[in-house]
Image (cartoon, rainbow, N blue to C red):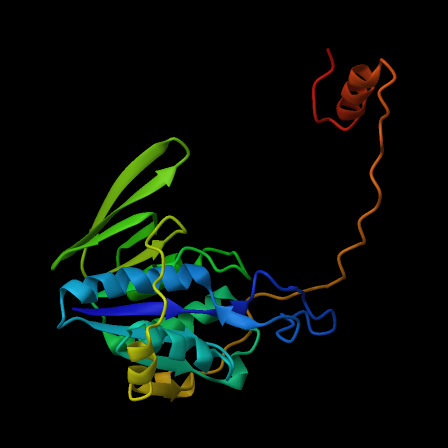
Length: 258
């Protein structure tokens, strides 16, 4: 069994996150870069299978700047067998479609039995790349799983939507995405940190994957700083606070008028 896990480097959610108003791109210098937590959970799903099946191979794949190498190194420290870094300046600022095209080329080369991704990244929150990959690779997708069971020929899991729980399954090869309800990621052990130094971490370009230049499929028209928060309106209760609050809400269409 070969399992490919998609890893993304994102700004730390505990730090400041902002766009560069000049370029319209993410300002990567605004906060520390970390492995997206949802991708660590995706990796944990793969590693738990590997714990029980020693012959399984786990490959971490990331597309990003030079700093993304550190995220892949952490994946190796956690237990991945090898890593692939798609490093290409021409891909800076790539939109979801371009990202999916390049990742699909990398996954096509790997021919993994199972691809695991997070359901959405904490920086873009588009949540569309797993579905795009499934379409491009012609594979079934079981998305937004809170629990996962990997078998020899099939993958199953549960998806929670509101008060309902759906049970999904797909024959391998397949693509799945997981949510924050999936397995909590392990910490790299000292043994894992030392072993990672000897594990292969390959750097490739879009061209080496057979992906040529492409025209932009989306265009940012304008970027502006978020406006400063203004002080809210304060209602002092002088016996009529409830009525005044209801009137304030009704005037803004937040409640119906009685």
